[in-house]
Image 1 (cartoon, one colour):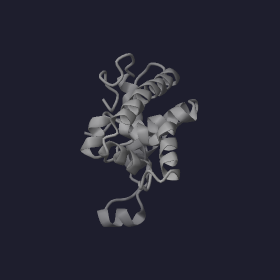
Image 2 (cartoon, one colour):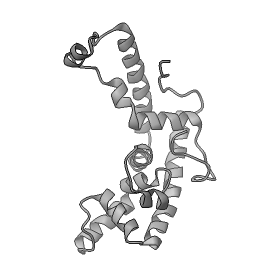
Image 3 (cartoon, one colour):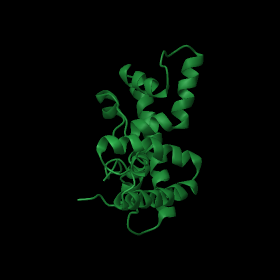
Amino acid sequence: MGVADAALFPDFLPSAAADAELTWFFNEAETAIEQPSNFQALLGGVSPTTLEQVERRAEAMHAAGKIRDRLLRLRRADVRLLLGLYTERPWSRAVTQALPDGLAGAAWASVPVRVAYVHALVRAETRAKDVADFVEEVVRLGRTELVAAWREQLELACAAALRAYQLVRRDGPSVVPEEDP
């Protein structure tokens, strides 16, 4: 399973298929769809368009298109939260302890945290160069009340976004292409 777990969302847990789709879409789909260049093929000694590669790419494009179409049916704020929740990115240990299971990424993507960052910039209360740096700074400075408020808001908002995705995808198997053995 990706980032969705019972500890983070005790009242709602998306299906394993939904979790797998979002994890794949936000982290692997682009690579799976990318067509290798002729130069890469020359260095690798293989044709860039073997039947197997064409089939894998077509399957990945189909899967990504289905997931993209589902995401387009959601509110933009929900899609942005899912992007933050599922996109793998490096965070400090302190941040992942304060905002575990993808909530740090969701904080980066959330409107309230972005607004707090802009307010802090305007008031010259931060030297953070971007929202991710601001999240790191707030945790590093021990602003636990603010982090706790963010976490509470994010848990509810992310659960709502996951519910919305689950509703548009309905039941059924994951569309994520299977890995080759």
